[in-house]
Image 1 (spheres, rainbow, N blue to C red):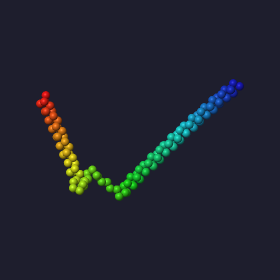
Image 2 (cartoon, rainbow, N blue to C red):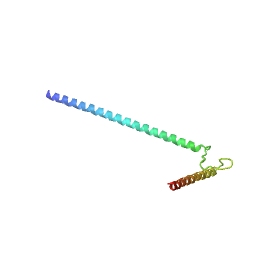
Image 3 (cartoon, rainbow, N blue to C red):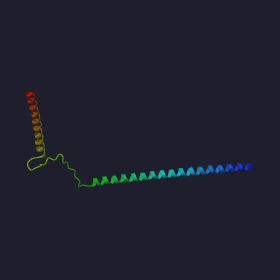
Image 4 (cartoon, helix red, strand yellow):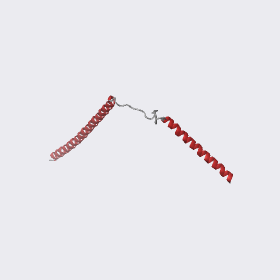
Length: 117
């Protein structure tokens, strides 16, 4: 009787161990499958994005009606008689004259204040 009880307990323990082992294996397999699926989805999405970018770049390269023109170095006439470069030099000259006038005004005020005190 004790022998049968011991065998019964051993079998129950063995069955419980097998059940837990199978459950852990099932969880591990599910995690592995989910991870592989996520990896495959990421790979496919990345590949698709790369293909779309490549196609877009090729599409831009195939367009012949696009021309890039630099406008910052445009030397065409801004008006009918003066170019943008001429206008730039006129503005620079006006600013220089204004700076000299302000300096002269300040220097003369400073000299006058010293003489009056």
